[in-house]
Length: 193
Image 1 (tube, rainbow, N blue to C red):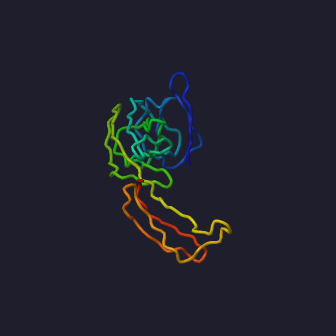
Image 2 (tube, rainbow, N blue to C red; image 1 turned 90 degrees about the horizontal axis):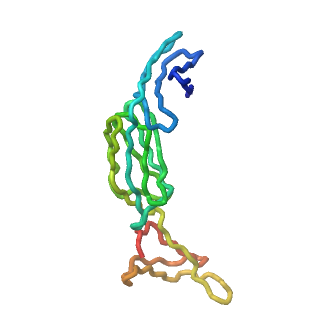
Image 3 (tube, rainbow, N blue to C red; image 1 turned 90 degrees about the vertical axis):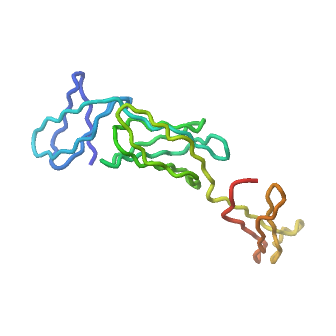
């Protein structure tokens, strides 16, 4: 269960009616200061001190077809405590996962229908550190071309017709025979022209 509390002007906070094992973590409103996660067993009134330290950041950029890609989610999971923080790329393709305490983070870069071309590193960061993990490029993993070969006047599909696929240099990439209704589908195509 997730329980939250906001501190008063003196930095004091109170969470009541808890028993069991808890991980305690704190941050200021804009997550520029964060605490290390503390694990504790609570079986009655207890005082837990939280020290806020400068937050770490993981930054980078995501591209698709040499163009910055917005809307890509970057997840950073702390391998010690399982806490996951994320960011979404801006229109310039940049991301800044903020509010991180020191530790080792497994990263995941996610956009439906796309795969990341480069290996995604595991990142070790210290309090207050900004780590630039560089640029990543996406490939559209569901590239496909579909259509129907038909008689123009009646729009009736033509079966058993060979459809050839060429690249921009007019090199044949693939060929396929239309189905009974005249349809065809090229799948698993690489990005390109």
